[in-house]
Image 1 (cartoon, rainbow, N blue to C red):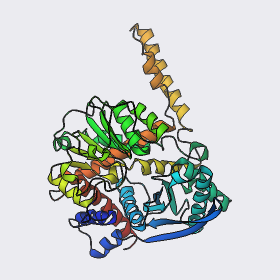
Image 2 (cartoon, helix red, strand yellow):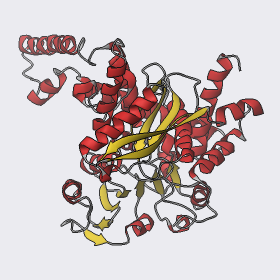
Image 3 (cartoon, rainbow, N blue to C red):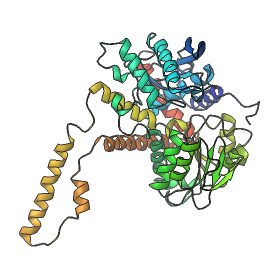
Image 4 (cartoon, one colour):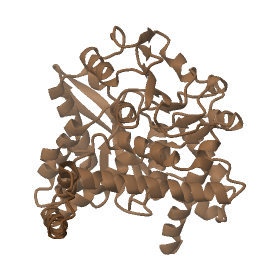
Length: 476
């Protein structure tokens, strides 16, 4: 339970922002310009459903237009409110700046429970919400580009892009008005799992730096590390799978709405996800031991804690009992400002949300570029790469035969070497490169300035400095 003394999500973001600017050389006017949200639009609209008119309230907030278009997801949840949307828009500004995607920050939300309506009804609601935003240029390839968030996915993005195309029949770049679309509607390979993949790449980069690992007391690589994941939505499910199947982590605990599962030997994540998809929860899952008080596993002993659900799950009420030496924020704002301070004093290392879950906006950027260029990544160069590689292999094998060396290249090596990069490989390569460079920019500040005590503060400093440079170039 969040304490009544706990700052709101928006206040937490502002407090973390203030910690960073306190050690930066920025004028007060520029600080305020960066901090404040430029605009928030509230739309209320009616949709005739089940024989009566239902009224819905939605928001689209634009935090910063230091770069355009602005970028940020749309979430569908009964908990959506203006403060939350504005806080998330601010985080998007800093996130885009940190990973050097050329966007300002924005966010949207609609007060609706998607589980309460049939698919055809959700399509009516989504299209009408999109209509209200599109006619105000709050969805536009050159001005404001949404993406999926909590409660939305490829399906909703496909409805939105179709609605935009219907209203802008001559816009050749219509598909670039949203990202996170299905492939047949202009999407990109690797976007669905991008945020979870980014969490994996962020952890891999952290574990490449022994000095950083030493602050957690952990040694070795990711293999064998005990992981607890809270929230098996799009982000948490993919992060759990990748860490378990590709990096050899033991996902010993998972937490969902209806409880949690625990297994000291490591859970079979594929089996857990199959049960979750079939039943909507983890109760009754044949894998692991069921824990009714699911949130208690946030406090379980483990090496890495991955909160991948809602904001504020680690707060003043439970922060002092957290045992994980390393927390990676896969969700937006899962640790409140008050809890953040407690955890830092305890020596816990936090990989902050604005970096850890930036995989989604990074691959969204690739999708936006693909839509504007009107060509699939790899289409022009893949076969040329294969032809050059084949020439090299054939020449090496000819030289071996001529000289009587007697060696041959293994079939597996030849297969991998002779296969050119397709879109998915290029997307993963670009995401990995982005996560590495962004981490290194944070770590340089973290290690070079004694007043910078943690990665979150370093991330804010890097991001705010880049936003400030953009505003200065505009004459502010």
